Length: 111
Image 1: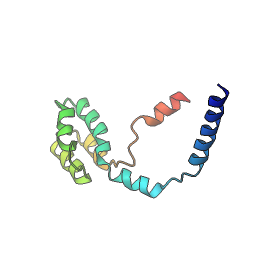
Image 2: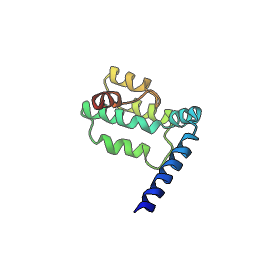
Image 3: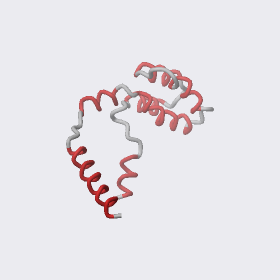
Image 4: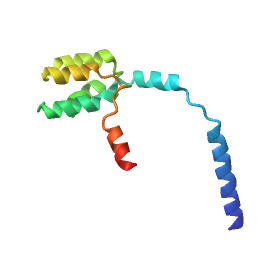
């Protein structure tokens, strides 16, 4: 039992040492996020449900599954929808890097 505990301590220290050597590449993370327009499928689907558009999930799945989703893809899709002007304008101004959903509220409620 002592040997197992000793190896566990060594493994933990080694893991912490390895983690301390990691460096965050903020530029790559930002670039990846800026190219992930499928992130906006969630708020678009939510607005579609709010205004009563039928099968919002299926409609979004058709444009997001198995293909590259770009800003143009999202904008063209939004323009094809019959949404109230204020909702459409808000969705058209969103970008993957600016959308956080309700993550802030969830994080605040946990703390």
